[in-house]
Length: 172
Image 1: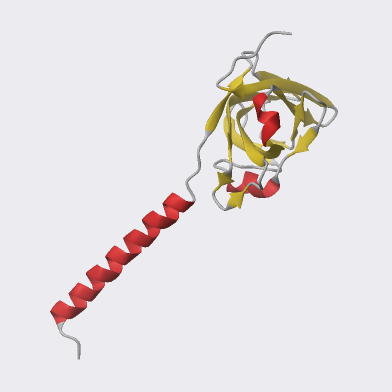
Image 2: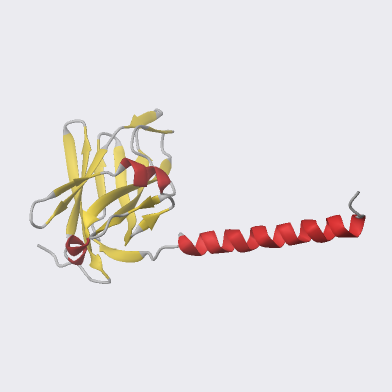
């Protein structure tokens, strides 16, 4: 039979080992978030929804999703507002276009790992908004130049410019 003081010491030791393991794991999966400039005209209205980019950043890791060498995740956070008089489901599709004309689709795995990540229909009450994040896997060299977020909702579309990290956007 194990004595009560020994069981207490064993429990404390197990607890401390657990804390050390969690701390090590958190450090291994911590990533650096690098912010990007957003166009001052950062809202697009499509079919009763207003899409406003609140911020954008890139990182090499989003929880359990890790970008391959030479790539990074560009995460765009939006506020999607339902300006219709009824609850509506938003099925917008998002893409990123580079200045060279390359198109990058939403990375579903990374989007699901992002806070507020959604890659399909989102129900929003009338006159309410919901935060939505979408993640794109893009080549790291494309991050130093302006990019364009394309939002498609059925037959309508709109675009919002996203600048390079720490940079500013020039007006066309």
